[in-house]
Amino acid sequence: MSFQAMAWAAKQDLKCGPKMVLMMLAHHADGKSNECHPSLQTLAQESGLSRRAVCRYCSDLEKSGLISRKGRAQNGAQISNIFTLNINEKVVTVSPTPVTDVHFGSDCESYPSDCESQGGCHTGTRVVTDVHTNLSMNLSIEPIYPLNPPTAENELVQKAEPKIIQPDSFDAFWDAYPRKVSKGHALKAWGTAIRKTPAAEIIRAVAETRWSRNPKFIPYPATWLNGERWNDRDIGARSVSEIIRDRAGSFIPAPLPEWGTMQ
Image 1 (cartoon, rainbow, N blue to C red):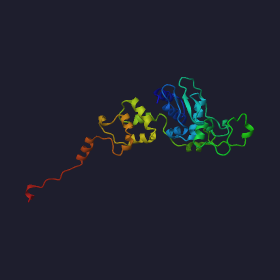
Image 2: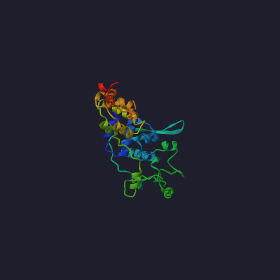
Image 3: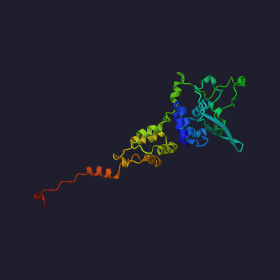
Image 4: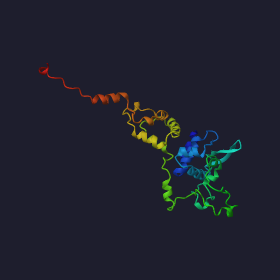
């Protein structure tokens, strides 16, 4: 993971979906070439988006100049693309791709290697990508996954998208965690943790945990994340001495009998 790439991605003025995909790419990027090659399925699982949405957002990020893509092959078969984060290049602001600009098929056509290696994004006849030179061949083919801009007609479709935590979810975790130390280590541990468990579940665990009133008994955030302590929140994070003190406070000894009543 490149901290420079993560910081750069976090500063981009993007909507929630594209920014989440860009953050995931930055998480996978190396620190030298800013390249990575996660599959679309991996990006979908990590971001909480559908693979179709990841395809669309990757296409928009590529059009804006934030990323570039290069296909690759292994043993004659296409495998996942190589994505490059264009950290030092000028960004072009683009609007969401309208339906009329769809290449008569899935937006995944821009990424054939991932789509085809994972079951394909098309059904039926293979759609020709170059709509400009094959217009007469494609007029009767309707897009399977059109790129719908946010309009009143597709508002219900937009609401049907799975609800996800925003890309700045680390900030939400940091605000919720009661002990704020070693933020850099915490950010690195956060990147690893959200690959195992959804960010929303981790943040919910922080909110539900019974934290110690003494900060020294609260683990560092990086330690808490690396230990997957969100699974231990039912036990709580109070110290042993606090637990013993609480239990002792609830114990009331029985009164001794009066001397005159003893037999």
